Each structure stands twice: as C-alpha cells, then as structure tokens.
Image (cartoon, rainbow, N blue to C red; front, top):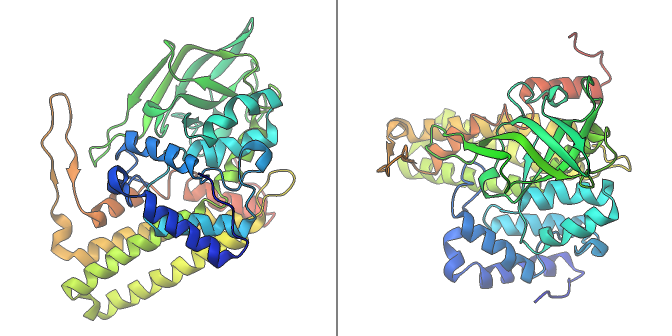
Amino acid sequence: MTQPIPSDEAEFRESIRTWMEEHLTGDFAILRHRGGPGDEHAFVAERMEWERELAGGGWTCVGWPTEFGGRGLPINLEVAYHEEYAAAGGPGRAGLIGEGLLGPTLIHFAAPQIQQRFLPGIVSGTEFWCQGYSEPNAGSDLANVKTKARLEGEEWVIDGQKVWTSLAQWSGWCFVVCRTEEGSQRHHGLSYLLVPMDQPGIEIRPIRQITGTAEFNEVFFDGARTSAELCVGNPGEGWKVAMGTLAFERGVLTLGQQMAFQREFQVILDTARANGSTYETVVRQRLTAIWSRLRIMRWNALRALRVDENVALPREAMINKLYWANLHRDMGELAMDVLGPESMLTRYSEAEEGDAGELEMGAEHKLFFFSRSDTIYGGSDEIQRNVIGERALGLPREPR
C-alpha cells in the first residue's frame, strides 16, 4: 500500500530504508545488488515481479507528475529515493527504460491517447520496453539511421536493423527511430514509433559477449507493423523527440548509478585491505583518486538535474557521460591491479547443449570486463568531446 510522503528528507529516507528492508526479503532476497550494468541477464523474471512489488508500494515513477500516475516528488526527494534504493541493494530496474526514458518522453511529447494507453503499464510494472536507436552504421551518429517505415493504410510498415538493443528479448514494446520520408537525410524525415515486439515481422538475435551473457541484441524488422497512431510527435519530428529521450537518460537516474559505482569501489577497497595492497603507495594514491572522483561525479550529477522547457540538457550536464565513463573504466583497471595474479583466474561454467556457457568471475572481473564498453556505448568519448566543444563551448563544428 502506498504510504504518505514525509515532508522531511531525513524521515523520507528512513521510510525508504524501512520499506526496502521489509520487502527485499524472501523470494526477492536473491536480487540484492543484482541486475545492474553488465548483469542485466540476472534473475529477469524475478526482477519483473519486483517491479510490481515496487508499484504496489508506490515506488515506481516517483518523480512523474501525479496526473500521469507518479508521486510528483520534488527533486531533492527524488534524488533521495534513488540514492537510498541503491544503498539498500535494490536490484537493477527491469522497468528502467520505460520509467526513465520513454515515460518522460511520452509525458512531454505524446498525444493524450498514447499517454493513456502506455503510461499506466509503466507505473504498474506490467509492460516493459527496449530502445531501438543504434544501427550497424548509426551508433553514436544516430542521425545516420537507415531503418525505414512507410504508411500502408492505418499502419506503419517497418524494415531495417537495430543493434545493441538491451533487453529486447524480454520486452513487449520498442520505441524505434526510423526514416519515414523517402530521400531524407541526417536529422530530417525521422519519426519516433512505438512498436510491439511480439509479431512475425521481428527477429531478435542475442549478441554473445566475452562474459558468456547476452543482454544485448540485434533486432531485425522485416515488414513489422504498428498502428499509424503510435507515432510520438508528428511524423518527421523524430529527431526532436529522440533528443528529448536522451536528455532524460542523463537525468536523476545517474544518482543511482553513482551509488552503484560507490559499492563497486568498496569491493575494490575491501580486496586491497584483505590482500595487503593498501601498503603500496601507488595503490593508495589510486584508491584516493577514485574516492575523490566518485564525489565529483555526484556533485556533477546534482548540478545538472534540470531540463529546460525545450527538454534540453543544461551545459553542465554535457560533461557527465565523458566523466563517469572514464572514471568507471579506471575503476575496472584498478580492480585488476589490486587483485594482482588472481586477475588472470576465471573459468567458464558448464555449458548446456547449444550454449556457450557463462564466464564465472567475481565482482572485480565483472567490473573490468563491462567497464571497457563504457567509453563507447551511449555516445563514444569522441562524440562526447564534440558535444562539449560544439554545444557547450560554441566551438566550430568538426569538419565532415
């Protein structure tokens, strides 16, 4: 049952801790600290059920306006919620893409009938979403998308390919950026469509990684269909809507990410203390540097928690992806150095028929392997530097 929201922040934080202690138990106890970046394959069905548990307590979509099913929390309490959730061991959210990316996009850009159809399912934890942005030749350069959609009667017919689609095999819906104007180029002629995943015209191929897991996918659209009404914004306005979604991606949810990084740092520190590497001067310096950078990450995130009336990020937010991606990569390298010779010890679990097996490893190895991707996905370092130079500092565009 949803409880009233205490106005005092300290009391509010205590109410979250109490609720998590009472509910992250029993069948949900195995979910503590699981399902985050690099671990999204873990306990998927259980984490989907956890979404419904959160919804029952009023802990989904806490920052959404109340008229859209949220709790309308002010920003300080929304920050408190994400921090306390992560600190309590809350699992990676199976509904993250719907709640953090699509929901705010629909609130700002979608027609009322689309809002009424899809927002309740996100709030209740009963509908799950994936993001159809990247393509083989359109990763960080999203404006290069080639996936096409054409209107046939009352439906869009979609052909093309998306890649690195997180959680596609478990999602009921996908928001797809595609080209709907023949002959259009770059940012023009794109539309933002909502597409059901369970249909004959969609094929999902998992991408097996070095860890043996496959939370990322290729998604092929071959005559896939969706209603003509399920276009967010007007046809041809997809770039504006897609950029709005990316602005929400850089928002308050990064506070939970910072807490997850803090927990990973604690694992590194505990390992260093246990094996005596804290007696090494260089290791101590590197540990201190990471500790400081984690606090800078938090303050960077806090000062950037605003999106203007045009759903655009403030200049301060444009450094965040570049900053935390390199911080996390350095944490992974430090974890391996702290482990020393043990960093070379991993093994694959027994593979079932037709399966490649899974790499068995500790938290340090998971951190190292996953963090190698941080400077690439979600906008590579090169793209982030261009964004900072061109949009934040007003420098001339990079020659093409």
